Length: 468
Picture 1 (tube, rainbow, N blue to C red):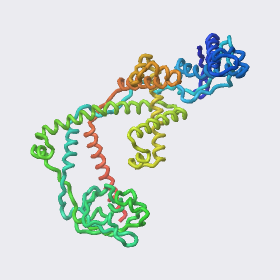
Picture 2 (cartoon, one colour; picture 1 turned 180 degrees about the horizontal axis):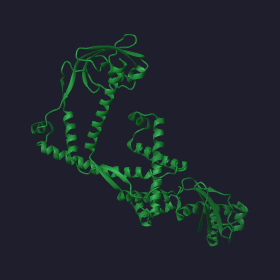
Picture 3 (cartoon, rainbow, N blue to C red; picture 1 turned 90 degrees about the vertical axis):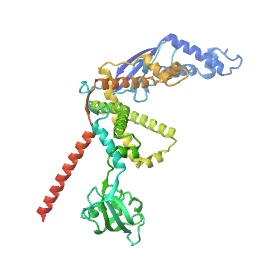
Picture 4 (cartoon, helix red, strand yellow; picture 1 turned 180 degrees about the vertical axis):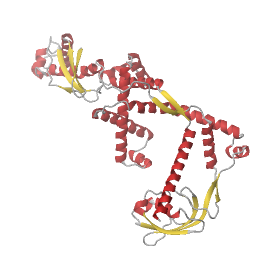
């Protein structure tokens, strides 16, 4: 079999396949023998009917048509593999011409392939990642989280006002539009954190600024408050909820003192030093698990930015189909339904579709960037590596499975995946990494946000004074 590839427009190629005359004759001979064994021809034993009898009974084109189909269907997948093509669509064949004995047979097909593209830059990517190990700031952050978990509440000074992030003990009387009590909201004493989403923002706005013993009466529109945890179940039952709220106390969190005794009695560690050591080990193990994946994701995101071309629709559709196939296989293995998944994640089917489309677009762009990187640095996949992948699959006969994939025109999928794996490892190995301390960065962001909030509050106060 000989092949010739001709580039066409829109990422399509034309592949011409020529099968030599000897192979054609062997296939014709085998086809006549198979037909003679398959059908009964009067006057002849099974398998002994000569060609003229078979042609007369089945038609002169029966055998040539069968051989033609076998050659085309069997050879075009092999041609795709031998030409190192990576199709993203089904092949389109021209008008078939039947084989003739003693003559070579030629056929051609067109197929859309993944586009060849270039990156704007092939220098090592620069990424920012958390530093390995555990810093003192990270250990402190984890221990503070533990202390916060075991916090207690104390009453703040009676003159303390409820703030946007305050805890407050509230007496709440809630009624619907008909004056009926709303038992899910009413309470003689309910601990509330302002801004937590338990109640709507309109509720928080009325309570913020009150002191112990002060009250507020107001109404909240249910349609505008359905995102609040305690209000969601009221949609369709009443248009408004009327509140009578009294601040019983403004609360402040009190964290336990970090002592050897508290650590031993509450957490079961020997002392503070033992706690810090265990926390450090935990942080280190977590980072060892997640940092490689974080680095890979960061490198892929940066690499994709260097690809300026649009992802062809066929490539994105193929990627989307693969993502959906993997997703539903995973759901099936978990024994879960699609409706259950949507409910657990609080999304609609349309939101799910939009998410998958966006993920497919991002993944396809990253894959194309890896293909460009692999081509630029001439990365290769050997036949031994391909066979090794089939051996890893646990198949009883890896070589037979490899042959099946080649004859089915799917072997390029394995080569493509391996080549992209080589590319991403090469990108990660060459990447320039800047390390940072997540705990210190989080603290800096917190300070910046607090400073910005104070500036905004001051501007609002100045604006109110000016208006007055």
